[in-house]
Amino acid sequence: MKTIVCEEPNRLAMKETEKPEAAPGEALIRIRRIGICGTDLHAYRGNQPYFVYPRVLGHELAGEVIEIGANAQGLKAGDTVAVIPYLECGECVACRSGKPNCCVKMSVLGVHQDGGMREYMTVPAEHLLSAEGLGYDQTAIVECFSIGAHAVRRAQIVPGEFALVIGAGPIGLGVMKFAKLAGARVIALDINEERLQYCKEWAPADYIVNAKENPLQQIADMTGGDYPTAVFDATGNAKSMEGAVQYVSHGGRLVYVGLVKSDIAFSDPEFHKREMSIISSRNATRADFEHVLDSLRGGRIDTSSFITHRAGFDEMIDAYESWLKPETGVIKAVVEL
Ligand SMILES: NC(=O)c1ccc[n+]([C@@H]2O[C@H](COP(=O)([O-])OP(=O)(O)OC[C@H]3O[C@@H](n4cnc5c(N)ncnc54)[C@H](O)[C@@H]3O)[C@@H](O)[C@H]2O)c1
Ligand SMILES: [Zn+2]
Ligand SMILES: [Zn+2]
Image (tube, rainbow, N blue to C red; front, top):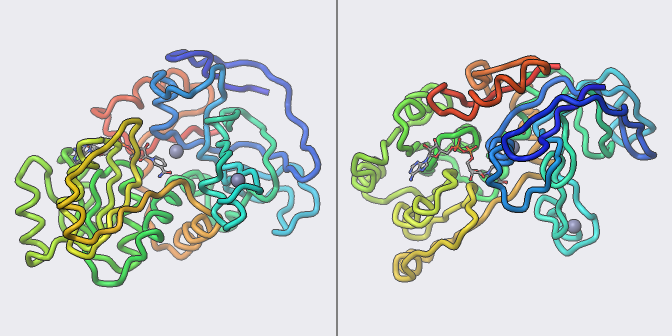
C-alpha cells in the first residue's frame, strides 16, 4: 500500500509499505480523507521541537471500516468512521478522572506515533466513532471542530453572554461556531481582514474587530462597557495570549485554546482585580466528538465553505507547499483517497 512519510523537515516521500494487520481490539480502516492542520504544517517545516522523524503525519481522519471484531458500538465493515487520534494510557490520574484528553502519557496519532497519511491503518476500535449519515469530507473535519467544542464546554457558556474569540484560524472558527450554538453573542478578533469577513458568514460572528483598530475601545463599546464574560485565545501567539487578559470582564474567564512553546506573563493586578479564571483546553473527549457529529447531522454546521483546498493522495506532496501559504486563502485542505 502507499504511505506518505515525512522523512525529515521539508521532505515528504511516497513509499510502498506493508498493509497493517489488526491486533485484537483494533480495527483495520481504509483512509478516505485526511484533513491537514497547523500541526502537520509545523511538523513538516521542522518547528515542532519534540518531533521525531521519519513520521507518518495525519490525525484528522475519515475512514471506512474494513475489518473489526465484536465492539461496544456495533461498528461493522463498510461503516464510515471518525477517529479520536489521542491515545491515552488509561491509568494515569487524568485518565482515572475521566479526562483522557490530557493523559500524562498522551500519544497522538500522526504526532507522537504514525498517523493516517496511508491507504490503510489500524486503530483501537474504541477510538472510532460512527459517522453514519455524514460524508467523508464532513467526517474529516470532526477532529478539528472537536477542539473548539471542547474549549466551549470548558468555558460553560451561558446563553446570551458575550464570547470573544481571538484568532480566526480553523481552531478559532470552530470555537466561534460552537460558542454560537451554545447561545453566545460572538465577537471575532483577528489581524487578518479576509478571515474576519469570513467569520461574518461562518459562525456567523455577531461582531468582527480588527486587532489593528483600537480593539479594546471597540469591544468595550460592543458590550456596553462590560467586556466579554468569556474570552478564548486561539492564535498560537504569546503576545496575544498575554494581552487577552485585558478583554475579560470582571468575574469572567479566559480559555487558552491556542498554545505556545514559551512562557507567558501578565500583570497580576489586571488578573486579580477581575477574579478571573484562566483555563487551558487540550484536545477533546469522546463526548465532544459526539457533540460535533450530532451538530453536523442536525445540519447546524454548513461545512461547504470550510474546505478551501483539496488534492488526491498522489498529488498531495506537490500541493502541500501551497497549503503553507496564507495568501492562498487556505482554511482547511483535505486529501482524498
Ligand atoms: N487545544 C488544542 O488541543 C489544540 C489543538 C490544535 C491546535 N491548537 C492550537 O490552536 C492555535 C490555532 O491553530 P490554527 O490552526 O487555527 O492556527 P492559524 O495560524 O491558522 O490561526 C491563527 C489565527 O490567529 C490570528 N492571529 C495571530 N496573532 C494574532 C494577534 N496578535 N491578534 C489577533 N489575531 C492574531 C492569525 O491571523 C490567524 O488567523 C495554535 O496555537 C494551535 O497549536 C490547539
Ligand atoms: Zn489538528
Ligand atoms: Zn493516562
